[in-house]
Length: 249
Picture 1 (spheres, helix red, strand yellow):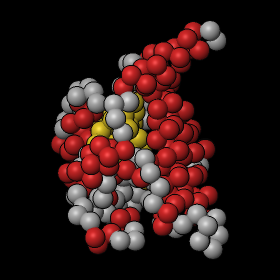
Picture 2 (cartoon, rainbow, N blue to C red; picture 1 turned 90 degrees about the vertical axis):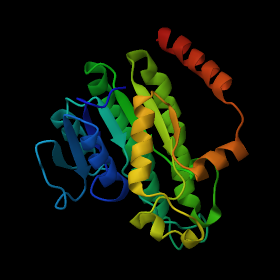
Picture 3 (spheres, helix red, strand yellow; picture 1 turned 180 degrees about the vertical axis):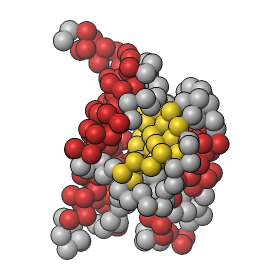
């Protein structure tokens, strides 16, 4: 997919990877980049970048944003939260609920709201920023891992449903990124981290190449190699099953 001239929306755009994505999209020649975040005071409009106040867990805000940003052909669901607490050892389930509401239900709401927008605009691309912990569970951050696994599974479902309308659905898997979120993770000092700018550049290259599963760093690549063999044939059978199901509705 060609980035130059495209119109994109990035959630969680006020810091970390989201901010780097906004900058990278601008530099790639996008005609407009909607920079969406719950707090937008650090985001400045400059003719290309347009700040949008958005909490993806707020249904009304998601709906109004889809109406306002009806010209996009790239949606990057980057917004996410992490409490980094164990499933049973946490004092309450507050973090678990927030992680699932944001990382899974918030992403689902965005996909549902913008799928028709992307269809009207020729298909475009829908990109979900996931994590290597979508593939396994590190118990010290057990509820976050569960939410990202749910989001990864959702990404596969959305890919099946939107293939017929020509939308490229991308899952982005990263290891350790040098952001505020990663700084609060147990054991973070033990691992080397990629800069947000590096991850953003690899993501955009993957989108332009039409890559459905982007492994952005050495950590993601090594974990994938350790856990999986070629899933292509199995995924193809799942796509065929969906196509039959959809044709009979």
